[in-house]
Length: 175
Image (cartoon, rainbow, N blue to C red; front, side, top):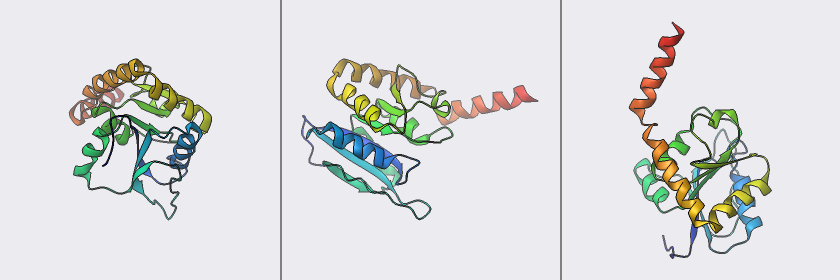
């Protein structure tokens, strides 16, 4: 992908719409203004809407074959998804399985998978807060390493098998 060791790569995976926050990620990168930041925006239009990133340093936009996703995520240093609404977000789970620190929404839908050990949770509508969180990870290698380890550890509990067993136990407790 033409990256250097000094580059700091931010990954986003999701629909190119307001709900997922692609425009807020792009604006946050612009606010930081660090030419070491490169970005990967994986996804595309959804329901006829399409907001494209305008920040400098974009190295990929658009859809990918699913088998290429790990390659792109493993080239990244940080995963950012300031989404407004989710269930259990598979994109975040996949990013954590690749050991990526996460910047995402401080909203209840994330509380079962994200915490201070694997993420920085932000107000998804506050572009400055998103930028500040990205900059904290960019400028603090020990924080980046701690979140990396926390993401890998949490991902161990989020395999399809373990998630299915959890759902089964919840349903059984309701009977």
